[in-house]
Length: 313
Image (cartoon, rainbow, N blue to C red; front, side, top):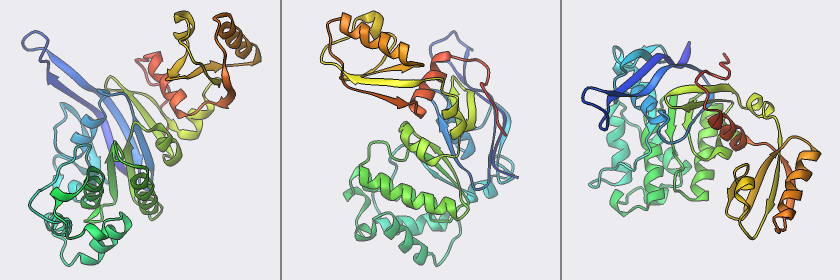
């Protein structure tokens, strides 16, 4: 039995810009099974449909077509059991300004009918670096601390399935390390984890399988190691102090002074470096590296495929 199952799920919204009665298709027949105990990554650009999938999974939105289940419980017909099995950390910082951290966690426990939960609450507070903030009002916390509380609230009823929607967006390195150590521990103990993130190095390090979503459709789905193996090239990386000519820049991934080109062989590497020299520029700190998940992701997105590249069990 899958921990999370999407079966031909579609979701359309009324289009605010189109003709009256027209609709926008946010999800287009998405089918996806995530097995119990997996650490699964769901990646895609803004507007790809990731948050729509999570909203349907959490029961916050109804699909236009198809069905979604959590541990076999349909999120619509068996909504109580499905939600009890699920802990969701949302993107947005949502908090109640009238309670302390400990009070917020006790109230969250009560939503799920969990009594005498202080021992687990204490463990959550310690594991997420919140012990010294336990009696602080939620309004007094920094953004990073509020996000830690959101994680604790999602886990307070010990759900077997954990959904993390951009959990480290805009937070410091310390929180990322603390969070991933704790979530990895829960995953090793059997919890299923679904992660969406724009930090692709996190997904590469943590996720055993990854799905890539574009325009509401899955365009790639495989084990992380297989996606990386499928990358057809290494990457030539260097720094320059001036802008590349447009014809050259159109072939590159440029971040500030850092320029990166896909490079299949030594001859192609030399061609790029020669073109840089001909433009009157000097390549500094030149290195050749293996393609990473970000390279794979950009390649998949740029192909603009309308059919799944690979659907693995």
